[in-house]
Image 1 (cartoon, helix red, strand yellow):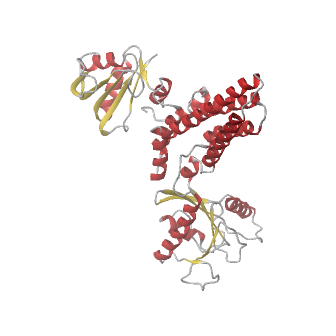
Image 2 (tube, one colour):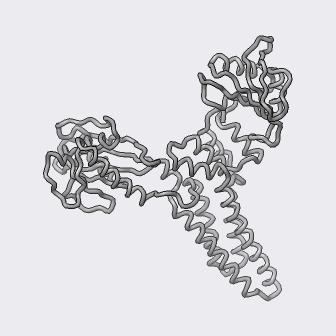
Image 3 (cartoon, helix red, strand yellow):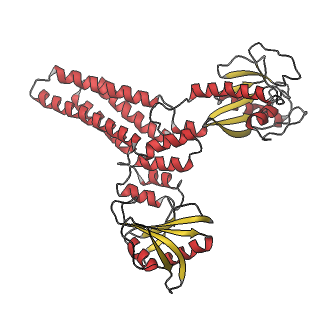
Length: 423
């Protein structure tokens, strides 16, 4: 296996650049650059030199012999000055050594998975952690990356194994013509308890919901003040505002983070039934499609049909009399009114997502959990012990796949292409 190297800190220029080397020649490569290596896991200052003996940099060198390393292999770190020329010179020196090459995206973490240092859920958590933009996303990712979610799945697998042991015992007794009622009752109870546990897990939002955020769509007739209100809510000029009806022809999207949660706000074309402009008609259809997919609708038409997702908004309240008793009055010239609207939106957001009260899984992971749950349910509903045993094996395989035990190369490629080169 090739020895790989890459910068695992931020790309230069930076104060410090951490250049990682992992693989069977990691220690030898570091020795060729730095001379005598320090004791394992102790930092020491060394002058790095290229193949011609010319100095590259004065850097800290750390050595981590495998297998108890991040990748499960011999690993060294060179803490360089973070200038582009310094990093490039060190990388050229390493690339010139036989058996060394630059790492591919996610390859360090992929080797950690292959060498049993982490499982697939932890790898997914690391990818999520790199992409986290909010505190809520960070907390969810940490649960996966640090193994909390993996331990939960391992517990489910132990439960399935325990139920399978009861089924196998019952099969043995059945062969002797005597199935113990207590065993049958225990099998049913344990299976249905685990089904209920998986149901509770699947009732929570997927990780993607916390990443994509709450979709807030502004709808209403032309010139109702939707674009001005969107700009006031996001605090910048995201949408074009003019007194000309039909200025907004297509959806305008803007994201904002409030109290650690992402909100995707979408301005839409004004809704009316008498337009003969084909471009405007397309915009109206897109507006209706956006409203259909919305989590929250800010409806600036007080005569609109009631929708459980809607907040009725009385925009331009400083120039128009209130025309709906339940409307939230807003004015772009009154910051307090915008704050009140945000409070109402956030209350709806809390009801939709709230704070995760347990582990969250990606949609692909939820599919595997659903498969395990369905197999367990079929097992519980069957009177045939052999069929029960087969369904339990199906459930176990589905749960094992979450940890990467049955992961395919295609699944791994899809995951690791999200990583930066040095991770």
